[in-house]
Picture 1 (cartoon, rainbow, N blue to C red):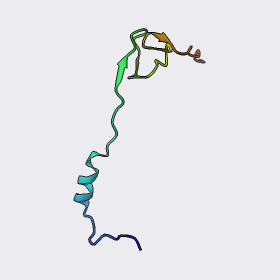
Picture 2: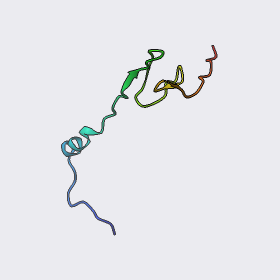
Picture 3: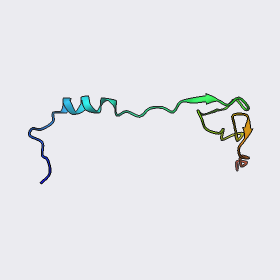
Length: 63
């Protein structure tokens, strides 16, 4: 058999352990070409550039 707990974990102790399990918001920076928000260290989804280079050509959005 596997390891079993000797005592029940209380609500408070469980909550203290889970206090740091919250989700973090992504860090956004402004694209230097089009000034739209994008993820840091990622190519811009609107203009397709990264570090001054054209990485891909974005598809036009359907309306």
